[in-house]
Image 1 (spheres, rainbow, N blue to C red):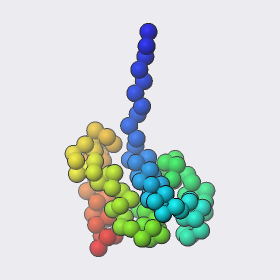
Image 2 (image 1 turned 90 degrees about the vertical axis):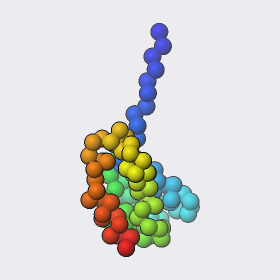
Image 3 (image 1 turned 180 degrees about the vertical axis):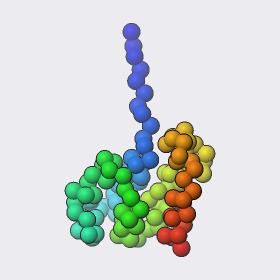
Length: 110
């Protein structure tokens, strides 16, 4: 008998952490370098970049500033899910209705 186990879909936290890691990699920047350029230490960033602890809005602003990108680049996977209409399926009922979050992102980019 063969049992197929499907991997759980990544959480919003994991998706954003992966996007941040990708942006850091594009610039050949390590988590240690990110720590050096911010008021947070390497352990703080390691736990967030690994997806163990969610990145908060302040974290995203710090990272965006260091990488010189809009915050929207860092949350692009969430934006795609919300705008594509599959956020509720992917992240749960509240994610697709998180208008307040997108208002904050728009304010930060203004």
